[in-house]
Length: 51
Image 1 (cartoon, one colour):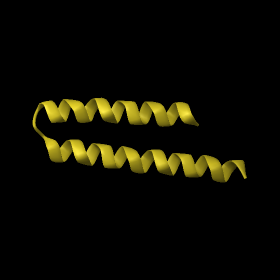
Image 2 (tube, rainbow, N blue to C red; image 1 turned 30 degrees about the vertical axis):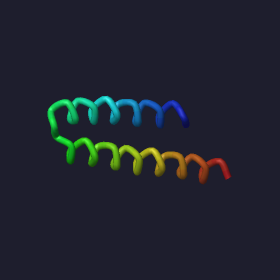
Image 3 (cartoon, rainbow, N blue to C red; image 1 turned 90 degrees about the vertical axis):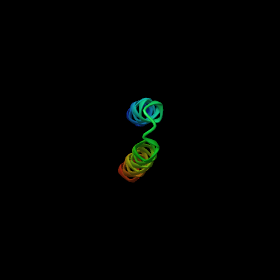
Image 4 (cartoon, rainbow, N blue to C red; image 1 turned 180 degrees about the vertical axis):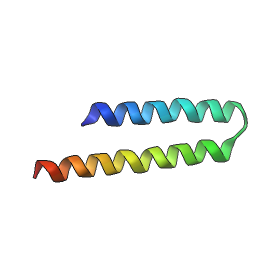
């Protein structure tokens, strides 16, 4: 469970840093928000499966 969340967030952070370097701040923000949403959904679905 946590491995997938780690890779998802790590890759999003890497991409967001590249966007910040290109001064695409809105894109960077959107990438991070989407990654946060995906990680939360993954976490909640794994918890639901465990119950």
